[in-house]
Image 1: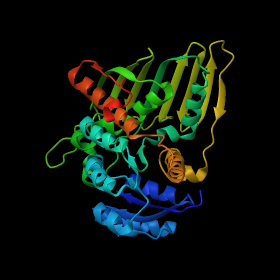
Image 2: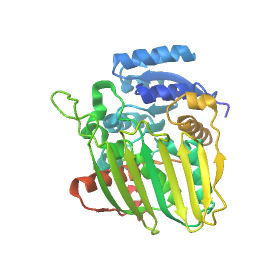
Image 3: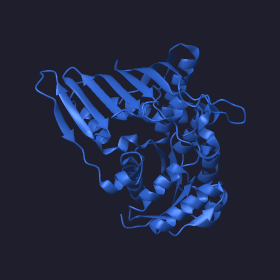
Image 4: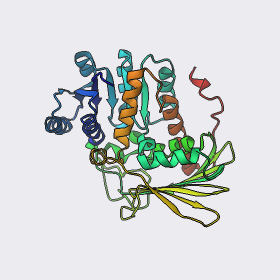
Length: 363
């Protein structure tokens, strides 16, 4: 890749600034503009740009950015509940788009964007970057070679810290985030589909808000976001997947652990240990493979290098005119799964899913 693609970012909070640091690592990308209505976020982004040697224009609104900066591609890292309106505006310019997860906060809005993206003339990519953590990438590669035999069980555990403070405290309420299982866990629902190469048919979930944010008040309102859940997903092939989420477990040694189990044994990956471990049923193991991630990629963000590697793949597709590895359909499916899990918790009942049309509903 020799062309320096002109990149803009709309939304320069924590994730927007992570994208800024990663763009600085890639010679073929030039950050030209950032937009955010919050003056404090703009000031922090401007200071970061200066420290990174990035010469950028600053805007309050994405409309002015699009009209004046004329970027080749736009990264949307604004709060979840703004994605639909910003995408509606940006897609008028037919520039390439990388929109952070979740695609939108509701199934209806995500479906509307996915329908537009199905006919969109430029690259449209959804930022479900957990696929690009190098240890996870290697884990999935080994699953896909058939090392475990046909996967019958997939287990994903995230034991982590609570939701971080955000500008305007937008992430404390389901109406802004889509709910914890959309906001945070769409990554993991995408990993389930990606690892199993299959579609879900039924979701049952149990969860609650039992520890975090209960003593907080925002204009008299108590936050309503879940802080723990178990989600069981049945797939069309007969495989079962489980998500185990706890957001009051910052003392855990590993933040993410994923296990794939088949007739031949168990394969697992742990983050941040960055180890893929194979445990065959003949008890000859375990065999541990250590996966290295470049230190500059680790230092540029909080997602174990995933943002850097996703950016490289996004730019390669932009350069070649190739298709997105993470399409609007992937973004829609991850929202649908998260919303179904939220619905199951609310109703106490399993929720059936039908994705057998393979995206024909977007035509």
